Amino acid sequence: MDDGSRTSGPQPGGPFPGGPRIRFVNLGSDRMAQAFQAAQGQPNWVVRIVVLTFLLVIGIPILLLLLVAGLAAAMVFMVLSTINWIMVRLGGSTPKDDGRRNVRVIKRD
Image 1 (cartoon, rainbow, N blue to C red):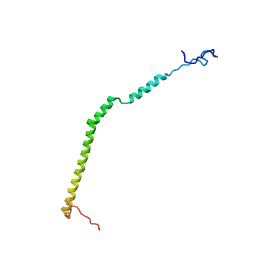
Image 2: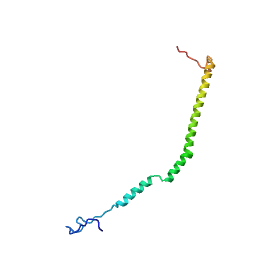
Image 3: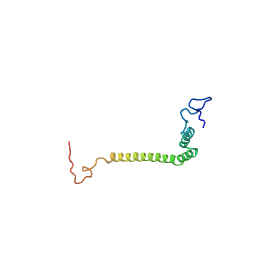
Image 4: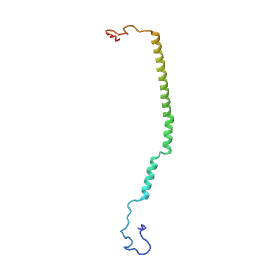
């Protein structure tokens, strides 16, 4: 086991003055593990193609349908509001009881 603690010539205390150096951590495998985790975190080209295909085939049409539904709802609301406005203008005043029965109306001045 040559860990670089030996130098040329005699050393005080023998070849391992503080005892043998033991390395429990292999830095190369740690770097490899970090690189592997980084590679696993990145989507590969197959995943990117699948996501793009999903967006083109399903995602965009759904968004377009929602947009059309929103526009249709706005148009229906405007048409019904216009019809209501016309009916109120042409209908004139309402009858005195406004369609109520057995209700006592309290007039406040």
